[in-house]
Structure formats: C-alpha cells, structure tokens
Image (cartoon, rainbow, N blue to C red):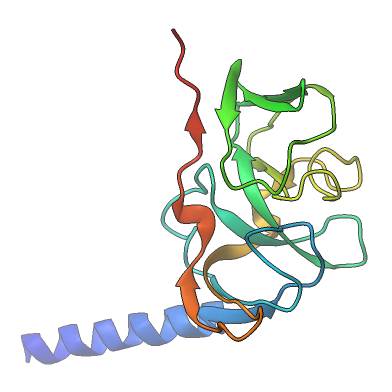
Length: 182
C-alpha cells in the first residue's frame, strides 16, 4: 500500500512536469551567422528546457531566448555576464568585473568598444561568437536578457557542413576562462 502511493505520486509528478514544460527537449534550426564558428546557418540544435528550472545560467552557456523587441524572434547567443556583473569592451577585449576574458571560441577579434554595462538582477548579458556581426546585449534592442525570456540551454548540435554530420556537445562546455593576473 505504501509503495503504491509512492509510485502514484512519482507518476503524477512526472506527468505534471511533462505537461508543464510541454516538451523537455526541443529542436531548433540556427538561422544566420552570428554564432560562427561554433554554430553554422542550418545547424540543428537541441534545447534543454529544464536546464534552468533548478539552477541559474552559467558563464559560457549557449542559450536560446525570445527577443524582447524583435517580433518574437528567437535568438541563440552565449552567456557572458550574470546578475551583478559589469561588462565592458575595450581594445577588442571583453572585460567582466575588471578582468579580461580569454575567449578561444570566437571567429575573429572584435572590432568594438562598449562602456561599462551593469547586468541587472534577473538578467544575463549575451553575445554572439561572431562578435563583429552579432546583434546581442550590446545593442539597445536586445540589452541584458531577462531570464524569463530564456527558453533553455543548447546542449547538442547536429552540424551540417560538407559530409560530416553528427550530434556533438555544444561549445558551452568549453569554459570561459579569465586571463591570469600576475
């Protein structure tokens, strides 16, 4: 009797979780080149919609979010800043909380400057890996992204380039490292 109640309770919880999220994993297609060289136009990605139900976003996560000011368009970007951080761009270098970032996943050096920006509570600061063409948190139409607009974390991609086609873990698994301070 006791065991049966636990099974029913767990089954109810599982069904509730599934219904509340509708789909736990969703496929999206990358549209554009703002995430080159890691995500190509036409790549398929799997979005983990549960990723942030139990933990907040982390530095380097690749996310899909609903654009706040672009006709409900969905964008794919990398998390660079978390609530309370300061982000600036100086001499083609992203600086988080006064420390330059080593970003080995970028397409090319950034040609940009940005004054210090504070990431407000409940938001993240995102940038595309192809910084010179990416429409991201540096732009006033996007700005820091409210966490409520994040659909989930991209965990896998199916890259379509040439003849090599395979599922692989996304580059968010490569840590965003800070340059050593000596």
